[in-house]
Structure formats: C-alpha cells, structure tokens
Image 1 (tube, rainbow, N blue to C red):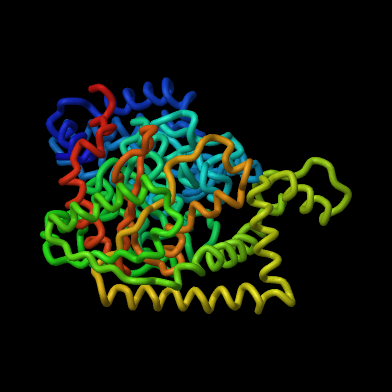
Image 2 (cartoon, rainbow, N blue to C red):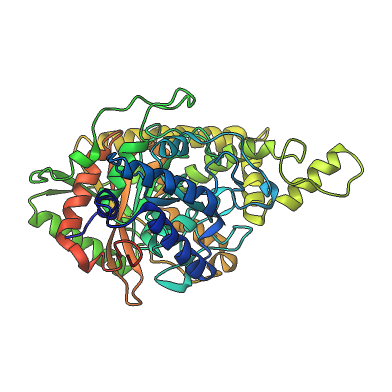
Length: 488
C-alpha cells in the first residue's frame, strides 16, 4: 500500500518525533548535496524556510495541532510570484525581478506555514517540454541524469522525484505539470480551468494556464488541491469552490464506473507505453469498472489549435517586457525603439522568440481570419466533443506522453519533434478540463511511463478517486522510488 508522504511527515511532526527545524535542515542539506547534479532549484530560500520552521515548532510546543500542509517542505515553480523573493521565469529578461506581492496560491500556503525550500527550474516562460530552454540550464531526471526531467515544470518534478522537496506547485499550459510528472514517475494534477487562482502566475497563455501540484501519491495531490482550490476575487476567471473535498472521496468504489478509451489517443504511441496502459485497463476491469471504447476524431486538430492560440496569447502577454518597467535592459542603444528591440532580442531565448513570432504572425492583418479565428472556432468544436464524450463515460483514460523521458539535447536536434510530445496533453487545456497523470510502469531502461485520467469540469474528485484505486492495486511495483522523506 502506497503511503501519503504528506500525512506521514505531518504525523511525525505532530507526535514530536522530529522537529520542523530538524526536518527543514535535513532537506536543505540534501539540496546542497543533490542540486548540483539535478539542477532542480534556481534559488534556495534557506533563511525564509528556517523562520517558518521555527514558527511551526513553537505551535507544536504550545500543543497546537498542525494543518495538513503546515511545516511540510515544498517548492514553487519560478513563474509563481513570491514577495521579496526573486522570480525570473528562468529568463534573462527577468533576472533580478523581485515581486512586491505573493501569488494567491503561495499566500494561501504561507498562511498555513508551508516551508518554502526554494524556487524551481523551468523552461523559459513555461515554453518547452524538456526544461532545457531555461537560462540556468535544464533540470535533470532523478531516474537517469542523462535524460530530461520534462517541461515546463521540470524543476518541480526533479526536486520531488529526487526527494529534495515533499511536493511542489507547477503550472500547466499544455501539459507542463503532467508531462514532467510522467517522465519522473510522479503524480501531476492539472485542475479545471478556474479551480485554482492564477493571480500572481506570470502568464504564458492566459486562457490555458493553470496551477497545480506535483507530488508522490494521489492522496498527496488531493490534499494539496483541496488547500489551494479556493475562490479568488483577484482572478476574474476564478470559480467558486464546489465544496467537494477530493481527499474525502478517494475510497469511493469504482464498480460500475465508465472509463472511456478514445482510440485517437493511442495513435503514434510507443509500443511499451501502450502496453503499460492496456495492463492498467485490465486492472480497472478487475475492479469492476466498465470500459467504453469510442472515437474522438476532433483530437486531430488539438496540436494545431493549441500552438496557434497559445502563441498568439504569448505574443500579447510578453509585450510588457520592454526594458523600461523592470527586468533586463540592453546597455547600448541610440533611441527608444532600438533599446526595446535590443532588450527583447538579447533578453529572450530562442524558443520564446520563436513562439512570439508565430503568435504575432497569426494575429497580423491578412492572417487573423485564416489562423487565429479558425483556431478559436475549432477550440469550440473540441469543447463540445469532450462534453459529448462525458455523456458516455465518467472519465477518459489516455497516455500522458507518447514516450518516456528523452535524452538531453533532444530539443536542440529537432525542436518540432518535441512539440509532438504534447499531443496527448494539450486537448485538456484547450477544453479547460481536469486531468491527473499517474505512473503506470517503466520502460526497458527503467524510465517511468505515465497515464492520464481526464474528467469533466470540476470533477477532480472523480479522476483522483479512480487514480487512487489503481494506485492501491499496483502499490510498490510502480511507486518503488518513493522515500518517506529524507533519512530521519
């Protein structure tokens, strides 16, 4: 039986078997040892972490009972704003930028005395599938340092998978939580669009971005989700909490539940990935679930729709980085126009510039109707297709990524090929649906394979329940790399 790492550590703290300061120091020591190999952290917040740990110890001494995430050492992706702590999006253009406010998710966790160990590495402005577009160099896969951790939340998955954080928050625009979770053998939850506040998340594509957890187990992901999925008046897209606590629904029976399998999700998938998911389907059948096979032909449009719309939004969102208000500024220029041009040319990396150019192109006169407007119409078609699919089934089961973690420098050899790794994840973001990636096996090189469970809007409790029932069955065979914290 897989044990919740968060509950395990919470129990140790409440029973005074270890102090929060001792626990935090152990994680900080391990970061010092391991981060030079993993490159998971771009900034370690030792001083801030120890101040909070001391507060937690004082609460325990006064016999106060800890909240679920109180005193638990964690990390944040470096595009989540942290007051008085540098937040760079791993881009040269934002080096030295220190926010004057906290993102709502961090404000919520901070109010519960979560221990922030540091800010995690990521693809620059969350644009990438390998973490290699980071100006700090990419985070590496803890299963094999010759392979990527995934992207764009690669630093979070590397830190959690390498046991130098208990959990972390990432952002998912087209699969950026689920893909690195799959590559590193972790659980990654992309909540429904609007379920978690985006206030303070530095935007890539505002109608796609969503914050969510990367953790070791389904129960851990549920605990974190229940904490951060709150209505926020500062986010115009935030929706009122539906009142269903996902952690309370994990043990519901899935007998008779309908699990949908869309054949299009399995086209172009590597054989070992497909085989692992077929074995998972068999386990669900043994648990009494009904497997429903159907077609979802609209999926073939998803990659094109995603890259047109996301890049269009990126070209608009990133227009604010001009060298005048904050961040990097070119040192030599003759006039204002040259200063802005040089600042953006020098400050942004190749991948970010590629996507800004694509976005600007599809929004330009003469091409707006042919690309952007058509993509928006197809987005509506995909939303309706998913809505219709959920009249046939409770959830949809699919691969998370067509392959396991690729080797370093794969993206520089063929950047277009890496876009294809998003084929299974982007439909969820287009439709604003929740999805969770969970481990379901290993390839011949020992690299993790992930599958995702997709649900209807605001039905996180369903996908996490179905994921948890699988997790209970496979146990330590799939989750063999979990450590219940650093050596205590």
